[in-house]
Amino acid sequence: MRIGIDCRMVSHPGIGQYTYRLACELLRIDQKNEYVLFAHQNFLPRELASRAKTHIVSCPVYSITEQLAMPFYLGKID
Image 1 (cartoon, rainbow, N blue to C red):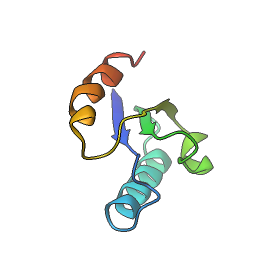
Image 2: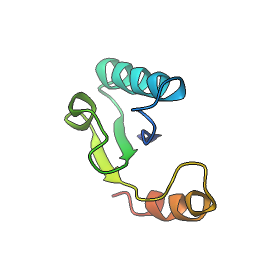
Image 3: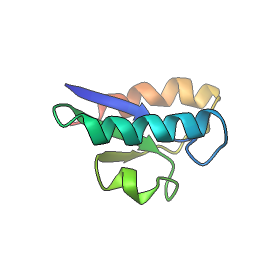
Image 4: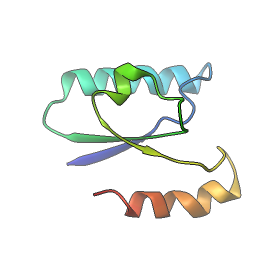
């Protein structure tokens, strides 16, 4: 199964730290599924980027652009 994780906020406290730790642990324990991480350019820690496919997403978090653009990015996953 292909699983996507929105990692655009991993540099933020709170939800960003939760997302970062969740992604790290999933990538560590789950070798069966394929993970795709969505991130802003140059904001994804190497330990995540080296273990999963990454897609650069340029839309701001919590914006109307995000609501319109994320389905487009999801459709581009191969």
